[in-house]
Image (tube, rainbow, N blue to C red; front, side, top):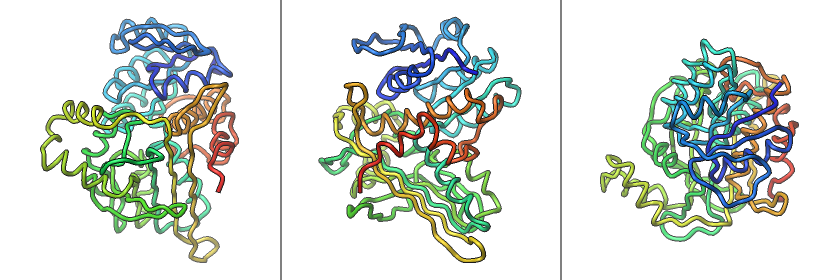
Length: 357
């Protein structure tokens, strides 16, 4: 049973994670910067990259949720494992995932990375769909986090980490194609997709599948994840990162994009999954398509990307605490039962706040 939870990083998502979890648990958050907002949990200021600071902060906690940039997570996970503290994060970075998985081999606590929206909920959703099939031919997962009213060629706003977006655009993506696991270039394999009467483009990006390629290796002909954007976004990012060579200076790319794309209050999250295969000997296709917008909780507005991400990781923490998931070692997102997730205290938000059709 988890009683006291540490949340590291109180940005757009972390502050909501701590807010949600504080409805059931004793939560203490830490950030390097002071915040003027009033939240229903205790806040401490500290250097989240300092090992001594983190060890003191985790001393009386049973779980830590890292909402920090991906490059800080490996050390946090290592410290948590050494201290026997359950660890959860939102990373989309594959090398970080692999390092945390290695750490988990000798851990007496849970290590559950990639618990956000994608990777995270989309993997739980995809697994819930393909569990209905006796034979699986293809699994296609798509997620888009977008401004509701796009402007300019990029049609985008950084409603979450710019570092994370650049990372998933530049790192290669793992897929299963023609039954073989392979790596493909992100920003490639562009397709057009229509959801609720509006057209989007979708293209390969890294990290969205988490560990699913390993899970479905030898069981499926096609498995891929793509990010959805408004048409024209991919070409603009190709120009910036490759033609202008900003792929070699990620810090500068981040500064340019953060300066060019202001944060918006109105956003939308699109989630689409499709599985083809056989059910009772017949070829079938199962689909899930939902969109989510900002919500108001206790008088405070939360962007769609914030709450869809926060309720996912909060649900995994809660399921571990309630004994509905294993209590030590590495947790794959696709091993979390979809029905259990959606019926949980926090996961049920995906049903409660979905966009009316």
